[in-house]
Length: 348
Ligand code: ASP
Image (cartoon, helix red, strand yellow):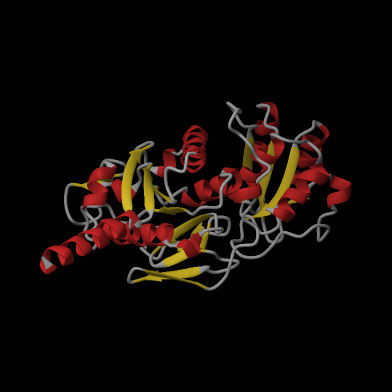
């Protein structure tokens, strides 16, 4: 009788502890983490081949951390990421949290444009439950594939209640980054992600997360940007500045009806006379022009070597050009007012 009672208690505890596991939904988009090669070296692999169920199966112990469900949103190398896939992700994430289907979300994603997806979602998801993006630098068939460990760490972070309020994050190579500040900084190494201006907000190791700071500028919960009904976002292009650059890209963007242009300037968002004249012309035609920099560290500041007031430009603060493009696209869904758009760049 006593052993029956003990068995009953053990069963009850078992049920209670499995009921307490956080519910995590993994949204898979493709990338090298789902990549497959013919051999164990890295050469010649195809990104976005392996389905999400197989990725989860390859991570021993992952289902001890959370109750997991997987959904395939897309299966592309992230060089083929589109605004359409971002909108699909944004819609599904907002829906999951609105219906209380999960306590946290993990997104598997190629590394090439991961920082862009992270910032787009940081600006458009309307909940402050954790959304954690990860990927890998080596395909699943490579020696020392980094995907399983990154996925394990991402689920660890998404399942930890301390992550609530941090919004969209990237977890990679045992570091936790704010989705706004993270950038891919290495073309091939597994230590590919850094936040060059701010550093990581935490570390994840051995199934535990340690946070050292909270992101201030991620807007997730109170975001003003709502693109759920927007079929298309305003077109914004990036023009890269270099010694003796011609302004052909700027002129083409204007001709093609772009609403905004980001200048990947030299130094503190500087450009030459040819760019200056083309920019002045674009602004006269109603295009919003933002000065960013091709330098990965530091801010672009107003009224330094360029008189923004006279020219009509605004600045990206410390957003790199590809992230500045995302904020300008979203900002332009709301206003064309330059002062308001400049405030966005100082706020988000
Ligand atoms: N080209 C791949 C991608 O971004 C690279 C990777 O995932 O590491 O999908």
